[in-house]
Length: 446
Image 1 (cartoon, helix red, strand yellow):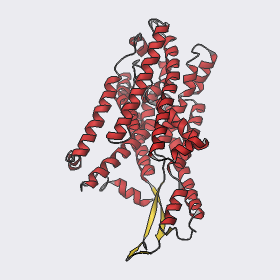
Image 2 (tube, rainbow, N blue to C red):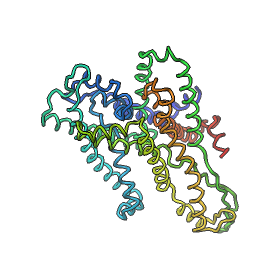
Image 3 (spheres, rainbow, N blue to C red):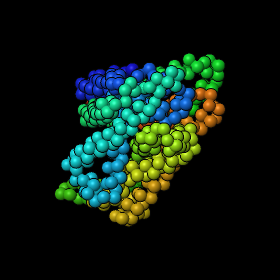
């Protein structure tokens, strides 16, 4: 409790926490505003139907904080912004114009952010069209009452404008949190939406009577959650230390260098971003299928890209591995590290400075990233394995929260936010959360 009290002793940190909490509250309250022309009871009955519990719609609803099932103005969530970020980063790897922007410092970063915003509007507009067409084709499975009261051109225009505006507002909230609050705003918004769904998932399980009838099954799920959290923390904070020697340099009357240190190369440099990026792309097939709701193509796409299908798991795992390497490559450049070491008189024992050092660091980074990417992929598809192991006797929503993407995102974002709070506490000479905990000790083992 003393460490929590220390947070509120620092005015700057206290203001950042209050600002972040207030914007997250605005996000949750704004999500309760419905889109005009929707029969909310009919939509809820459809989303609660047995056929939709294991579909990608349920998973998408989890990522947007349950706003899809409520026909909220925030139905699209932050996923269009993430998709636009993926596209811009992919273009930065192949198109010279975007590569030039990435090297121009702050001005280039601002231009990339502006292009990402434009891309967000375009992608959100396409998804809004698909959502509006999809909603107009749905009916209440119990009463056959249409979910959309009147499928007119006015409904489509109002829905598209409302959903796109909601996505842009969420994007603005995330940027404000990142600039003036604590943590990554986009990641915190996703984590907030996932955590908000937990009480509803537990209530569904309790009402079904499964918890009372088979308590050992849920004890096993709790154990799985603990073990996965343990491994996620270990992989996220683990480092591979590369020894570095600095030669002595005489500058004027002072002697610099002559010390031994190391490069703390993180095992999982990409963090949770590969999971978020891959999940955003996995929503695309069902979004395309929503344009033709009553066709065989829609049924085929919704079937094979259901989270419990083997094809979905395979594609999801491959995307996570690819994005882990891709995001590691754009966030850590061995050539720049080698050049900076060479300028400062540093070298790795037994390795020549320059290109040989860059190749050595890149080779180690590639080797440590492989098991980390495979670990992320296995954890992400683990809910499908658990769901089949329990013979579909538990809801997929609960399994996905305890053993897959949701838990990885929550743990990763929580660690990142704690590290930022830790840095603020240490600057003010207060002990942080991680100083006497297991995380720092675990880091030294790698």
